[in-house]
Each structure stands twice: as structure tokens, then as C-alpha cells.
Image 1 (tube, rainbow, N blue to C red):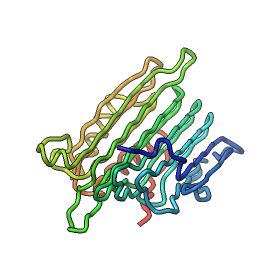
Image 2: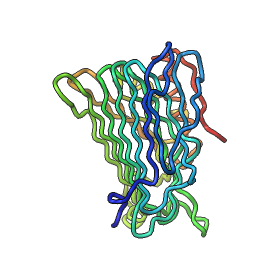
Image 3: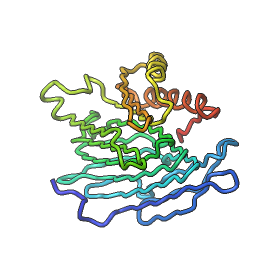
Length: 285
């Protein structure tokens, strides 16, 4: 299948965050094409800066390539979200692709909470994210994959969605792979075979947490929290030699709203427990 690998990117965004005067600010910012960020917001008195990514083109199309580079320097704190859902339209004979590189410095923190990815009929999408973390840094990433509608009113008709997260811990001894998370959803194949990890559900929610404070007890608490929602949820843990732990929580449902509320409850618990911050509702509708 031809792809966007050899094409010039349709959108590129670079964002560097550092600490000045007790607040996190953009020390480097660059954009071209169909990607940019809105002006910064400060949602509380913690000094955490919130940036909203925008795609003025409104959607991803076949052979589109989007590149995002985020660098959160030592002690800086970034909440990064999107203005609206990422919509993947038909990609005949090709696929749309987003590549993200993220670096977190010592005691840096990133909350990455985009709106849902909506894949429409005959859409193929690949998302590859590489995270390089200091052993003392903190990453929370929440995302939802949902099917769009087709002209006949049916849903769950996209071709495939591929998500790849590579998470590395950088130490004085080199780079250690903490997690390599590959996810492939092919609704047409699942429909034909009657098999697949979606187990009859149409929506997928994922929460990735990397932090030295992650524990088996926290995983159990998050699983217990998800019992209040109409979703099927499981969690797994991993730990690096440097002491940083990672948690991946996945939830299956038939509702975007239910998954958004579930992930919001989980991230809200972490904001309060670790940072003394109130939960935030970033939905724009």
C-alpha cells in the first residue's frame, strides 16, 4: 500500500517547553502547513501550561503525513490537547500518518489528552509515537478510537488503524526500552473471521501512565474506578531497571462519551493524587 513516507509533510509542529518565573512557557515554537497551536492557557495556579493543537484543514486524508515534536525540559509541566477530534477520511490506495517524538527532561511532566480519533469508511491510519523519558519524569496519555458513520448509516467500516507507542527511559547507562505497544484494528477482518480483541465493541480507550509512583496498588485502584462505567477494562504493568514504572489501561465500549468520561476520571485521580490539582474537562462541545 503506497504511503506518505516519501512525501513532504502536510503539517509540522515543534514545541519546546521550559520554566521561567515559576511557570512553564514555550521556549521554542515552530509550525508549518496544516498544524499549529493556539495561545497558551493556565488552568490553575500550578504553573502548568496548556496548549491546544489545531489542524486548520479539518481532517487527515490519504498520503497525508503529520510530524509533531515536543520537548518538555527539566521541571517543566505541559498539558497538550487538540481543538477537536482527529478525523480520518477515505484514503483509497494509501493511508494517513502521524509521527510524534516526545522528550521529557528531569522531573518534567506531560499530560497528552487529545480528542478522539474518528476513522470513517475506507480510512486507513497509522500513528507512531516515540517517548524518551528521564527516570524522574511523568507521562500520562489518554486517547479514544471511534468509528465514523458511512453513507448507509453503518459504522465501524474503516479499513484499519495502527497505533505504535515506543517508550524509552534515558539514563547515564544508555537508553532502556520500557514498553513497545503495537495496536492494530482491522474491522473488515474481524467481521469476516468473527474474531478480534474488540470482542463485539466498537470503541477503544487507552490510558498510558509512566511515572516512578506507578504501582500494582494504583493499577487496582484505577480498575476499581472503571467499574462505574459501561466499559470492559483491563490493565498491565511494566517496570524499568531505573525504577520507572509503566501502566497501560485499555477499555472497550460502544460509546465515545463513556470512554471520555472513564479516562477523565482516571486522569483526574492522578492529577489530584500526585499534583494536588483538580480534574479538568477539556471537551470542547
